[in-house]
Length: 185
Image (tube, rainbow, N blue to C red; front, top):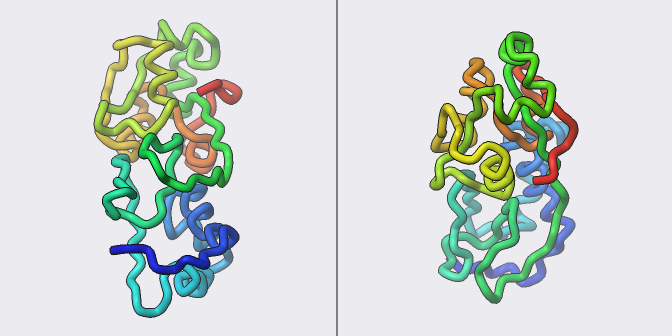
């Protein structure tokens, strides 16, 4: 599918920004007040004759091969010839289940890197520099390696160890607690 709306206003991308910030359509609709917000903005994105597919996942689609028309990524794309616009910064922190942190006081100190269990993403699940940052801190010592960010969140929430998450995800999950200030990922 070739993107045919040449007059797209960047302000219309607020919809996608809301989806990225909230982790999905449901959260974006809640922030926007209702799902009606999404319906009103679809025409601005594709027009009445073209479907809009909102795809999420760890894999980056190739915009040059028209696998998607718009991509929201957490790192600068390495594909040449793409128009890029930064739509916001994402802060990261270390999170763990409340019970895990209570049972492992080191989780709240710099000793966490040696004394705590860690959950990381597999090479296929990596979506950004936070995984690279964690690898620099702990090397190959992850207790659990997950294929998707969703699996990593669930593992952390069940008490399997600590992980690195975007603040907008970790702070909204009542099962988790932040173990530090923002990290420099």
